[in-house]
Length: 349
Ligand code: NAP
Ligand code: ZN
Ligand code: ZN
Image 1 (cartoon, rainbow, N blue to C red):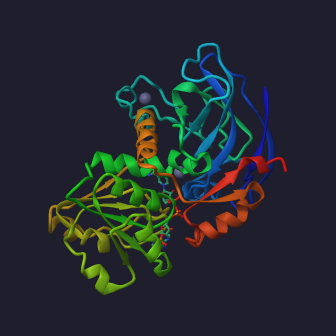
Image 2: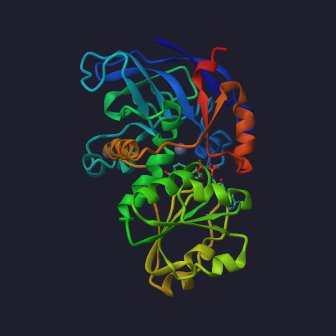
């Protein structure tokens, strides 16, 4: 077994605290990665606090992982020791069902294996994530980090990047379209950058007046402060597509009314509570309400290559591991510009 140290939550109310555990020995298909950076996703916080249902503890969160390959199994062909590698939200799937065969492992019919808090086929225990010193992952679920990307700022691409890239591509966002992004947090700021790079006219919706200028700097053509009724009214029936990244309960109908005929609003934010939807807002202009979950492995590699080509990374605040609980408090308040990334070198400090 391989010794690993990390931070774990032991209950929904306990702060994250130092935790020692073991990773499995490598199979022929595995790589072992020394983790250099791990992004902090709002999903980590939802899961640590059991906001989506019963979390299995101890929970070591983290699914925006970038690091260095330190060991490879005998059948590994994509990586050699010393390469940079990345791991996102999934570490395995059945690989047999039709979504898996089509490269959409996130929709595996048997249920894919999440990077943390998910039954692990190899050990029979629950998977433990990236707030840790090292991880062992099948190379088929390991990504290549394109040269030229800042490693710490690239880490959030592994979840925030793919979760926004995938629906923007699926709904064919591009030139000539007006695209709304709701919420300027980790996912939202990546959506603004990616939608802009895809050629769309981007309208950012934020509850925070203080983020207005940042929205423009990050690539939005227009910024609407959603608390301002007149600004919202001016966008009615004007958008082809909306990507909603909000992590807490909010009024979906206010955004549906901004879609034009046949427009689609896709939810990627996962507030714990269900939200009421007005049928009138959908029928009025044949609008569609949809959802999207991360993205497949091949698409994640495509997104990394797209970001490298367009010079896109996340705007990050690098934190030592010891500041994680404070970072969670700030995340709840929407006070992050725009992704916390943990510097794993501080883990053993
Ligand atoms: P985040 O960095 O905390 O950003 C969320 C943003 O939502 C905030 O910055 C804030 O933006 C806005 N917001 C927060 N509370 C709000 C409220 N009460 N009313 C209106 N707006 C509010 O979170 P994240 O990491 O981007 O994640 C966002 C959500 O996506 C989470 O629920 C997460 O679990 C989910 N997620 C889903 C997937 C998927 O595959 N579908 C993948 C990753 C994450 P403003 O200040 O600009 O208003
Ligand atoms: Zn995430
Ligand atoms: Zn499958």
